[in-house]
Image (cartoon, rainbow, N blue to C red; front, side):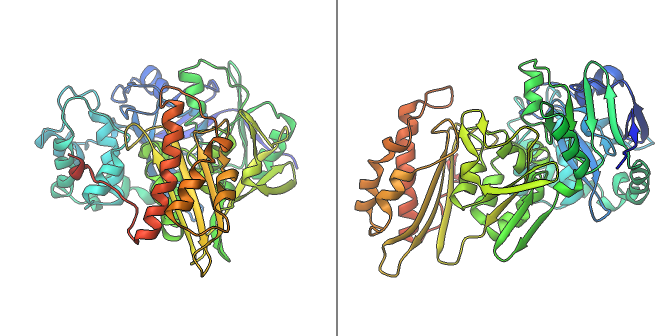
Length: 492
């Protein structure tokens, strides 16, 4: 089938229609906003999606025809991913009469800004939260701000401002909500059914649909596939890597599906963490809670579960729990598909069971049965928005006599790939679920893992923590208590 080709990106910036034909494949939204549009409210702090100073909102049409806005890191978001989107910067918030937006006024009145560098990012993150949850709880505020760092205020004035926003006016009069129907029509008008191809210091491609993507990638298997860019963005900003040609797939609705049928959750590879969390919290609460510790809210709005699997990182957060749950993976090349156990996808460091031109299409996750216990533990230097040092996931089924009928244990950060602890499982299987059994099994960890030392943890620390997490899992399953979780107030 012949596909129409368009040689320009089309999106909406604040209230203005944008059409660009001179976009480089590695051009970031942050650089374009500051250098080409002189919108200096969006700041560069870390250039790796950590500090939130560059936060903007991106609105995208949903499969049901709605419009959803999410906070994103402009520093690692590529322009090529914005075709058909609405980009909102902090300059768009104030009213036509110059009056501050309720989020901005609350920040002023509650002294939520000192040096001011990070303030626009906080404002945009709070704006994204306020539109969805006008009266947020403290926990919801903290989750929304996990990806925003401030060195001046101590955060408490910002939290007070966040609690007070709705006292300055309700969401009903907010421009992005008042103009929602008109903006949906404008974004729908940008959908012309054409593939985007732009050559400018390299090549970027935005496929029309999933079949178009499959054909393009099969013909150009060396291309870089970008969904959320939370990983590839750093290739550019930190490692100065060339990534052309690039295929941007964030807008492919066929990869955005989440379904639950016959005890199996099927998640399209393009589903972001934010889009998956509600289903995961409902059916696999421990996995849903883990999602809230993956990056900040901006990263969760961009990053995809499929991308976390496909990049093959040994410290990716989702593969270990998915392996422990017995997940399978659908891979596609052209029109051909195959399904494999997720644990078999990871072969060695930087190597996966994926043929040239083949891509991750979906992951299928069994919901734990009523007689199964599932838990996941993430160990990091700081609790929120930090990269894993060691991550453990356990799935346990006991027989009526209290012996271990089934056990699956998987770790990240302990080997060159996410990996099951087969020797430890063997030591537990068929044995009574007792502390003595667990302690004997802990001696088998050296057969499964030989961790490395790096900036996040020493090999000795990882080896000890891995053993202790098994003991923790045992204690929690036998005490009847929920997973121990210390709040920031208790910790203080």
